[in-house]
Structure formats: structure tokens, C-alpha cells
Length: 179
Image (cartoon, rainbow, N blue to C red; front, side):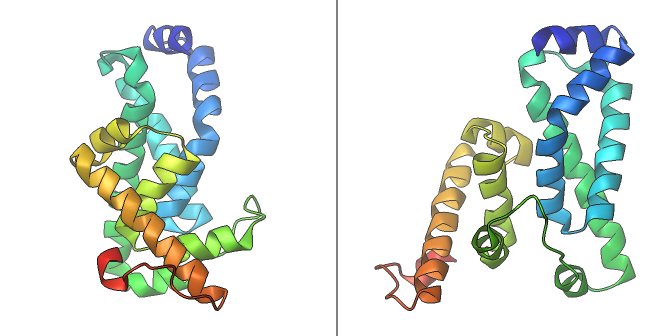
């Protein structure tokens, strides 16, 4: 991937296209986890690709490409959310959620929907995109310890939701500690 990034930085359009194609699934999952809407996710991804093409020369180290690109994507998603918030209340956006066909596991989607947003994004970046906590920390501009705390609390919320859904006891989790 480093050679693709270096070629893209030299304005090789084919290398850039290949690089973006390799990141498309991760970008989609991240954008959809934030926006809950295919059209808005596609807009955020398009804007991200354009910005990456325009600014790839500013990337200092190739090994940070994925972190850099994800930060741009999250910023584009947040721009869309701000615009939509002015248009109509955020609750309506969340209610308009349509399940993704890529997620065959309905339980997974239900668990993700049950998470508080601040935990959901960290969980998606960690488990779905496979990013390290240090990378997530850099992307979200929060301390690494906060990322680890949100992962822990997100896991607890999922465990609590799972145990409540199965009719089992809460597995020893204290609801207050999950918030």
C-alpha cells in the first residue's frame, strides 16, 4: 500500500483510484455508522475522495494514510450531520435507518443501534475497520485512554443489551457504569 500512496502523491490517477478502491468498504462502514443513510454516506465518501486527491501531497508519512483519510471522512460526515440538523431534528434521521444488506447478522445491527453514539463510532473503527486504539485516538482527537474506556463501556452496553434480550440476568453489569 505504501507504494500506491507514494505513486498517488506523485499524481498517478490509477494508483489513487486503486488506493481508494482498497479503502471503500471501510469508508462505507464508517460513514454509514455515523450517518445511518446510504445517500449521505455516499456523499461523504465522494467528498472524502475529492479532498484526499486534492490534499494527498500534504500527507507526510504514508503509514498514516488510513488514519488521515478516516479523519477526513469523519469530518465530512459531521458536516453533513450539521447541515441535516438545521433541516430537521436528529431523531428523525435516526428513525429513518435502513438495515444494510451487507450485515447478515440482525443481532449485530441491533446491538450497534443500541449503543450510545460515542461508543458506536469507536466500536466500528476498532472492530469493523480494524484500527488500533492509538489510530482511533488520533482520528477522533481524544486521548488513547478515552478510546479504551469507550471500547470497554461499549462492550458492557452490548453485553447488557444482549443479556436483557435473552431474558438472562444482566451478567453482573451495572447499568450506571455503562453510561
